[in-house]
Image 1 (tube, rainbow, N blue to C red):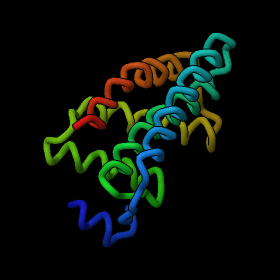
Image 2: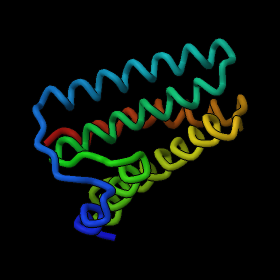
Image 3: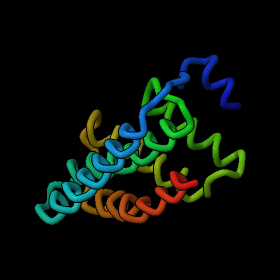
Image 4: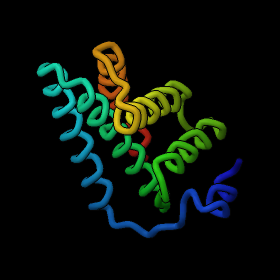
Length: 138
């Protein structure tokens, strides 16, 4: 699937952004990561997963904005990030971490499936995922 396929299938759309949109996403990412750490310390594993995922989500969304696109769904954002990897523009580890966070958040929110181990893994991914911001710099 190409970027054009993602547009045609309605996963993403063209979007003209203002630079402030990227900064807002990065600030939201930082906020969510700090909240995820606090939730983990409080043994609130469901919210750790949700907040850690959103920390990664906001960084990915910032890259999407930088490239003048907007996602139509969480899965659409994942497909976009995956496509960038196929084009050898980002490392596979980021695709894998984001995918793990996406599915862990879905299971925590919609099936009530979460644990300390899952929360710790997703939190660690989110901490490492901060490095993904390197793709936002020209």
